Image 1 (cartoon, rainbow, N blue to C red):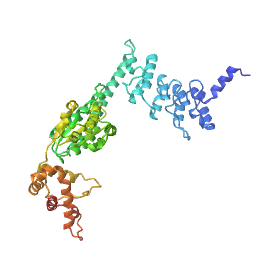
Image 2 (image 1 turned 60 degrees about the horizontal axis):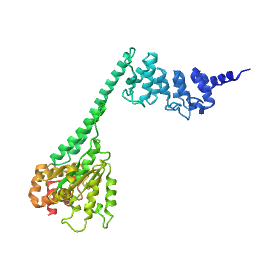
Image 3 (image 1 turned 180 degrees about the vertical axis):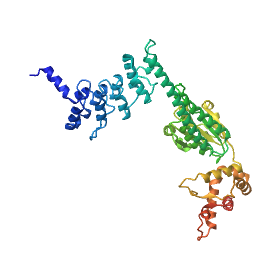
Length: 471
């Protein structure tokens, strides 16, 4: 008759965990076929699955069978035992050099702990094979454990560790070089995207130079971090855009939002556009909450305050103007780093805003002047618009006739508009000019016209008619 201890040993030997430990593949297969729910069964003490046990004992045939199990339930690669160890951890800490790559090939997470455990095993067993295997799968040599130590930090300076230290150092340097190369390639791609976006801005050379400085600095910081260097996060400055209507202030703010997000300076690319009516309430106590809601909406991106000078009264009155309250609310959050604020408006009236608050120039450190567009710049804007039409645009698929060169359109604008008209409309002249030109194209075409080019080509004659319609 079997005693209690004998019965315990017999039960253990015939359990699925017992088969996983002993390497009895046939016994484990039969057990699973009889009861597939045992695939991820946990044992009583260590809370380990059969995959934990087989990986920890380097029983590779059982590991393979469990990983390739075709039942409705799949083996849990990242299951954790009572110590928080996965099957890969078990293989690593026990130096199971054949089981570890099987788990890695099936997508087991190769994070920091397996390499730490493999290093500890190598120190005890003077066997680097498992460390080499993990490093061949490009596990990160620089990650830290819960105590803030990297795998190489666990090596003492004593004899016997030279080979292991040399192995880790070599892979650490190789990983740093690889990260730097990847960061450099990504940086070049993103800078090319930035240059493409900047190419759609006509004029504004100072602003474009500043954009390049911000973008390049931010992308170089990413490379520095990829090499393991510690650099502080950058914070974009608050700005003022000064200039007449139609000079591109709102358009540039939208592009700026996309660019600053693209290079990682802002967490989102949203630009919240507001004017006095969006911020200022009609009664006492309304302005603060109204302004704060808009600020909250803009967090993570840009708050673009158009016609900002309207927040400041033309003359001092006895009662406090609510616009000043809105400005003070905005100024109060500008040091938080949660939002970038751009104040925009005519150059002369904006002086009221600058003079209204002694902290304005301390917080708003970048001032950009948007000059009136010349006839040549308006011609360039026209070409850019025609080359970048959205699908829902009235001019999508239309094109300019070869005779509509930048020089020809420049001469046309100069001839058909007055300086006063150009100064008042600026870039706002281009869209109605093109819409009118398309209408003229429709007017001069016959219904029996079947040539695709004729149906879609805007000529210099059409542009001329479009300008004359504006007068």
